[in-house]
Image 1 (tube, helix red, strand yellow):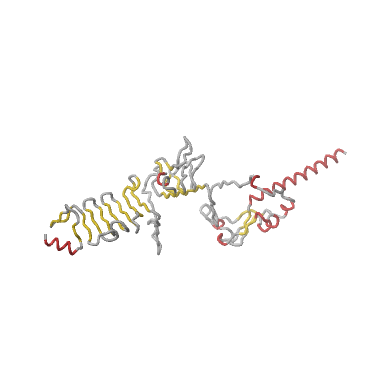
Image 2: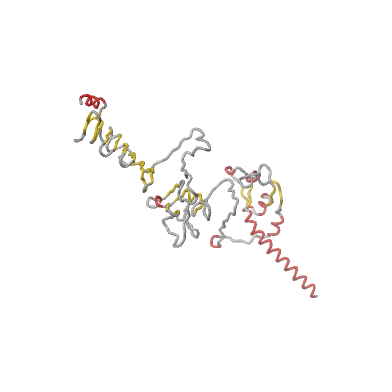
Length: 342
């Protein structure tokens, strides 16, 4: 026993609770504390509860709770800021952080094709018919964001109505609280998802905000969009004058793209060899008659100073050109009828 006392003294450890037993075989029951134990310093080991506290009792500290299998970090004011738990949400392990940041610093290539990205969630060979098997990152309010992953798919706070099925996803990034995924009236405020095999789904969906990209947007399928055109949104409405004269100054041409052409002409996923031969108009010619539909590319586009044309805006010019031409045809027809009647 004397040797044990000398050992404990040399380790700066003391017995502080009644019922602590020290024997030659070990120490059992009660608390063990360092001599400097206090609100902001020292170490305590609670043998009964399986809790170890480092850094003091009430301020900045770390607690290891073996019985509940969690690790907690507290800031200088004694507020819990990080928690690692084996059953953070239901039976799922995880990390909870308050006003925190996850920072990954890579000083070189982090790996190869067999390694994971710095932040990575693996599907682990789950079948394609299994929902929620890979990574999900959700941004929302505290009452909604952590409860969107329904067993049958992803459901949002605002229901889409009875009889509308949800979609299953294997990975996704969602922003905001309205996360219902409905075929008729989607409620995702913004989302980037990987849809499961079969059926309809979204690779990206957004309701509010601007989708902005300075470079090309490439797709091997249809792109469906609607331009705002409501009369209530427009002032100073004027019919395009002299449409035929304007059309006569614009050539419809076939041509070959050269090395200054856009990226897709040099090759992309669906056209590895690119597209050299094409048809269109010449932006400089359009600019002389309809400058409002010609745009000068900025520096970030990779084609600084090059001109682009809003081809869909040529349609109003063609409409008025056809109408003017039709008026001319009808006038000629009337003259012919008069001549034939004489």
